[in-house]
Image (cartoon, rainbow, N blue to C red; front, side, top):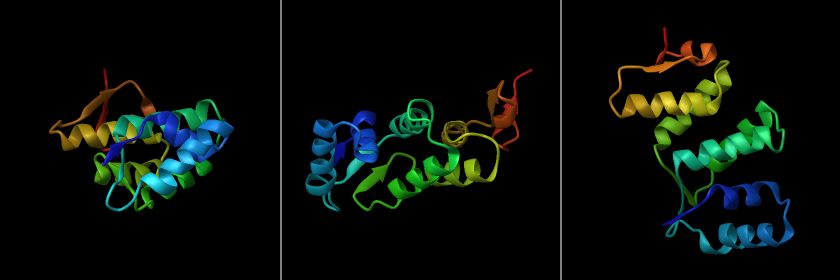
Length: 132
């Protein structure tokens, strides 16, 4: 297994830098496989979503499709995969964003009773509580 940094995943998705996209395409097409998966950490996935929204100005639906596509890529392994999948579902069903959902779910998996937040949208999720 080989770890993937945010910029490699972004170049593969966006294809906006000819040289770097060619390298990312080679990695995804030739280097990664079922026997040698690419590892995507929760931090990298949150950064990918943030970059797609803030830098590339992609909407929620396009980002959701991208995350779903990444999750379906057999040659990728995700840190806290079950939390990532639930965060994907929760962020699509409500007003909280993907990163907030993932933070709360990973925290819960690690034994927290709740996650305190000032974010009113996130506080509507069962695994958050509004900090007061």
